[in-house]
Image (cartoon, rainbow, N blue to C red; front, side, top):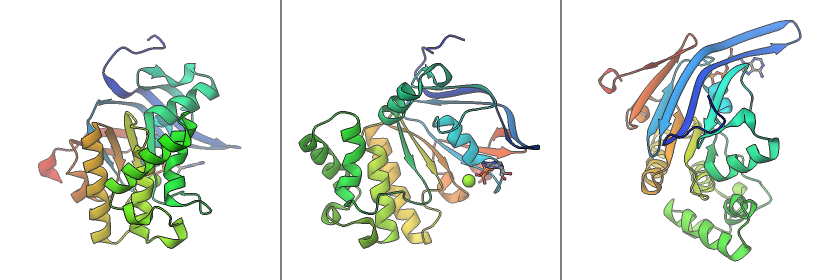
Length: 236
Ligand SMILES: Nc1ncnc2c1ncn2[C@@H]1O[C@H](COP(=O)(O)OP(=O)(O)O)[C@@H](O)[C@H]1O
Ligand SMILES: [Mg+2]
């Protein structure tokens, strides 16, 4: 296949394999995985701990390289890009939300959310405006000057969601973004993330062990023994 894929898919991988190798120890995680995520589509990935969900998300986000196979982000073949070009593509086309918020502690919520916008080349004023709008839409308009340590767990995750979506990426990749929160807060953060994704027509690939959250997405896949299989909603 060529270096540029001309489909509407925001994310595509084929024949993806990952084996961790450290010294003489080899850990095969999966082999021959294929996945296509269309524009605006929301996909949940469920599976037991250790099944390889985080590994898959890292490969899809260009944070790690596959042992074999290819990943295409917004039609671009990741392996054909330089590190710098891959970084730019990540900044422009992908947003990440993790279980732990990864906000920078010495900066305010506003500054944290402004950062990806400024990295993309916007000036301070435009970045602040855009970041404020996103923080407003996740209900943090009254907390923009707070630093992460001055926010609750749920508020920190909502700030991380705002940061992931602030550049209007083609796709957000979420690795158990509500995994550290109590049930009610998790449902709330999840609902806001989904609403923002849908409003922006951003695709979402969400790793979660919570099947009740998973079934709210368009499609649910289970990673099991190195294979991805479709789970019908009525089985969840
Ligand atoms: N950096 C690494 N080096 C070696 N093995 C790893 C590494 N990261 C993950 N693994 C192994 O790969 C498997 C899948 O891990 P992971 O993708 O984190 O699973 P999940 O997110 O589904 O819980 C596990 O058996 C784990 O121990
Ligand atoms: Mg994981």
